[in-house]
Length: 295
Image (cartoon, rainbow, N blue to C red; front, side, top):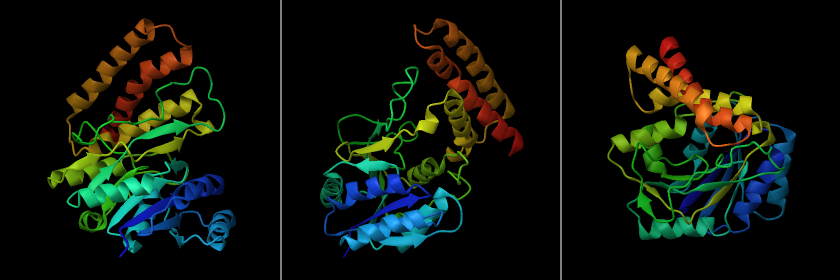
C-alpha cells in the first residue's frame, strides 16, 4: 500500500520543475509516489517528466486543462494512491530527509490528519538591496506543536493531508488561488479553516523543511504591494467572516493612518522597503474593502 502521494502542480516552468522533482526523487521512500499535474500542457514540461522517467524514476504525469492551481491540486489528490497527500510547489526544493521525516511522523502519529512544515527562501540572482529581508519565509518555531488556528497557518508548498479528509471536504475551492498569471490566494487557508471547524487539529513539524524560490519578478515594489492587495481580497472569505461596512471601512482607515505614521517613524532603511512596510497593510485592507464592495 502506498502511504504518501506527493503532488507537484506546474504551469510552464520546466526548469524549476526539474530541480523540484530531483530533490524529491533522489531521496524518495519506497511507499511513496510522485505525481506531476500539468496545468499548461506543453512540450517542455512533458520532456522533463519523460527524461526523468527514462532514468528509472517512478513518476506519474497528469494533465488538468481547467486553469487554476486549485483545479490542478484537486486533480492530483483524486487520483492519488496514497493514504496521505503532500503538496509541493514546482519552484520549491525539499530537504534531503523530507519524505523520511514525513513517514516517520505518520508512523508515530497515525491519528494526525493534517500537518506540515516551514519553508525558507532561495534566490537565483541577488535581490535588490532594498528588498525586505524577512520576505519569503514561514516558520512556527523549532518544536513540534499544534497550530493555533486562525493565528497560525501552514503553507501550501509544504502541507500533508489525509486523502479521506480531502474527499470529505471536497478539496480546494476553485474560486480561490492562482489562475495562470493572475495573482490570487486563499484556497489553502480556507481548507485549513474548514478542517478547524470540524475540530481536527493541524500540526507543525519543523523537521520537514522546504526551500522556496523568490523569483525575480517579485523584486518589484509594485508586485509586493499587489500581492498584499490580493491577500486582502481573499481574507474575509477564507476566514469565514462577514463583516459590516463600518468594520471593513474602519480597518482600512486605521491602516492608512498607521501606514502614514510608519513612513515617517520607521528606522533608517531604503525608501522602497520603508514604503512596503508602511503601506503593505494599507493595500491589504484596501483589497478587503474592494472585495466587500463588489461581492
